[in-house]
Image 1 (tube, rainbow, N blue to C red):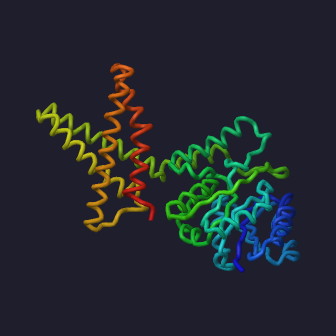
Image 2 (image 1 turned 135 degrees about the vertical axis):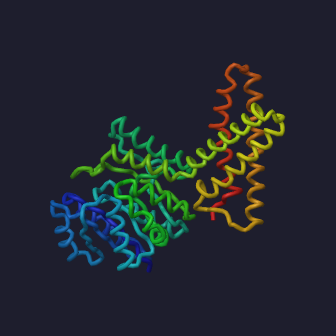
Image 3 (image 1 turned 60 degrees about the horizontal axis):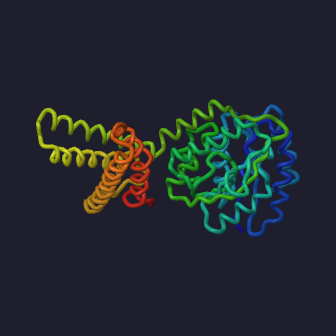
Length: 368
């Protein structure tokens, strides 16, 4: 029998904790081949949530309680995961809210995906069968949907539709590998950081549809302004795609700078200047991407490996040049030369950058 531990962070959830635990353990009775344990991590709730849990421990032998200081959701999960790994030795760890916004009846669906080979299963509100509350106002729906799209585009991981929902099942090896990396994240951005780290370590991500329900009792703990700021900050500082775009900008400056000096000051012929400036920019891009943008899958230092990877990098870069040349020729032929610079910017942003990022990931910095 494998063990799954559901880590349930709480703060002032006295109105919900009894019902959510009853529903979890009722579902657990229906699951074969798994032992379900629940670890409540209570952040010293003044409403006596922990006292209710202590009484329920007399009824449920697979219920544990860990009392911590109030340090934010991320730290509650860090404490809970550490305690579970040390004392319960689970095969799978669950994240779940204690306010009944997550339906315990979905637990078997998560475990089925794990049994089928997934390392990290996310409950998604944005795939077929999932939903957000119909009674949410337009601003809240936009906040939720656009927020997820910003993260998806920021990381260029469009196949993962849900980054912020905290209903998940995660194999223990993923948590063990990244526990130390996540200790600096106190709030809800912890959810984004954990999934990002899991993807970068090669974990197989799967999603199941979930119907998110608004809490009926108690109050939400999320600070929307702080959450938005922390999430955007995390994406900006950790996105390989954004780093890749910055490196591309540096390459452009190098290319343009060398061209200007060689043509305007040194009077070197254009064709030779173009070769020198373009190849210098390519070398710079290759080095910076390997050391920074894709450092989590940095290339081997062996001479043959680097040389072959650099050759593939050049071929892909040549493809970018061909696409840009054809695109500029077509757009200027159809629309005229007046706004050539606008066409160039559009082609670079919407065609060249996604094309390059996709093929560099697939052919040069492949997932390990």
